[in-house]
Length: 394
Length: 244
Image (cartoon, each protein chain N blue to C red):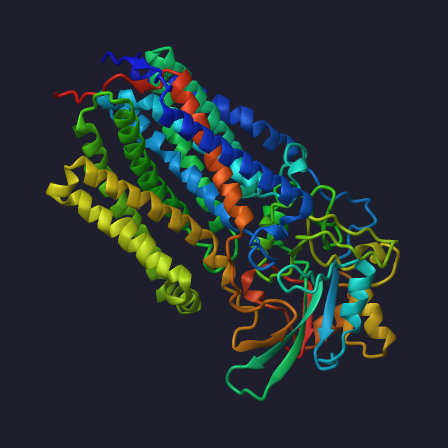
């Protein structure tokens, strides 16, 4: 199947405004990281009871979004759906950027950023998921570069091999990211279902983002695209991923709720505060159920605007899901004295608060600005976008 | 390209990438392993806290610890550091039973903090003391996430106070926790909290070698009804409580 790719012109006022805005965000985020590394992480919303906050939530969100390449390269490389080849370049480029965004978010969250480039190599600890994952992420970026190179050079065999390898590696990447939380002894973290749940949500957000990016690129450049290709990514693909996500979340929470030893933590997660509102409304209802219904219904599921709307809901819903992986498990206290209640202490011992600080928001937006800018530059200087995309049957 | 060739080449790409990234993993194996001729080998330091003697309004051990180790206090619950702290607890069934419990790092035999530290900045010494190398810590705070006892702290702010200039203070951006005053133990002394408790003749804290059956701590552990906090978690704490 012959597909023509070309750079976008990138000379419109909208392009320059978007590029300038993203670059400004990148600079603001970098300045915020500088302030935190000079003055201390107290400028973030984190505390001794909630040592991870927005940056880690965003890191795992970005890494999950890179699953878009897994979806497209899987469709093309494993299932042989040649009509998705036109999207492979954008998918691989975006996956690379999102993995870099994940790594940047983790990097800028460290107390001693100056040591990050040396100590992990000289004193690597093989039992830490924080050691294993950067290797998985860097490997993933490397394979994405090989995949992109093969796609640019139209190397058929290498493309298939790299596309197949990206899929295998991506499963490792997303499982490993879930394991950062699943493999520590905290009540709301240590669940063997967390890695598969992470993979399911990654596939949902990755597919949803691919839909949004494709529609934006094709509409933005005025290039022709067969709507069937977007519709099929939404229905059945995204809809099925959403059902899988809901299923794993249901089992995970039912299991926690059913066992007496974790019931209190389960109750806290489901009905214990603002995070529960995010869970029920942000994730379950608006992030999973409503988009799944929109996609499954024939009338809305076959209309591009509705599919785009459903995809936007999913991306936001999965952002909440990532936040819900990190924060509730930290603000919920470990039960050190079963049968006793803590009445007084110098430390926050009970349920504590976490609120996102201005500096954290700047950091998160900064990472978004950097990769958004890199994406726009990629479109302008690399032949990433196909001149047209057609369904095979058409 | 037939299927066999495809799998062969695919496997080669995967193995190549894994190999390149896995090499540092293999080379790092064996770091911090015990050596038999080390002066630390063979010992297993532990502590017994007798709650029946510990008085709820006494802060001698807390003050001694803070002074000896330059532990940061910013007068803000969010960022204050407590290598040792007091927690008052009340029985949920009979509300008139209250206790004041000292909490510190348990120096677990299976420390989750050391297991997850990506740079081996937190590790268990051969004598069982869990320490943090503050010059190696990258400040990722994964150890704080992994410690189920909330016994680890992070320097969110620069510590302006430096009362004990014989002991270093930490820069902001690194994690820390009780280290059983390893610098004193290495000189044949006991942790500052234990010495302070003894100095005011309360003697609620006992410290010694759990591997030595004749040590005071071993004798208490062997003969008295001691408890460890959340023994069921499998972390094997080396801090025992009498009267918990």
